[in-house]
Length: 137
Image (cartoon, rainbow, N blue to C red; front, top):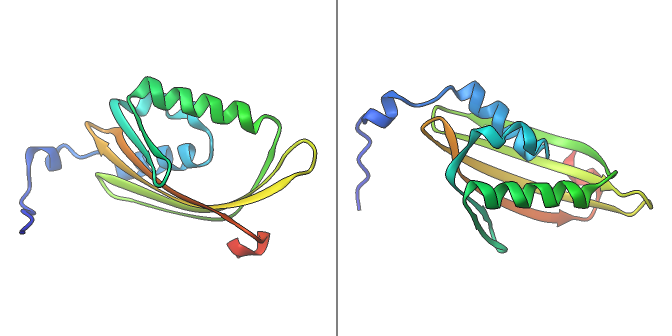
């Protein structure tokens, strides 16, 4: 199987890598509402191991539910790396969550964003709970 890497009309109209990186960082940082206007109507969010969410309305609903679940939790990010190009962005994080009663959890995640027509068309999220706050250092 060969892959054709010739320039296409889509490549010529590829988006702004900095804009893509900022959108990806906002979404991965649970600042979902900043990104709703940037979601493609047919966006697919793949939560690896947990299933797919298809369509902008469905993704927004999952985001709003996540925000409600987080409530007043505090979030400390101890690792944050992001990269982007005209068609993709990737954000790698380790975050530590503390809820209102002091329960804690730590999550390592890597989110891969794909863009079409300068909108987020696909998000692939890999997440795993980690044991120690030191895991991000």
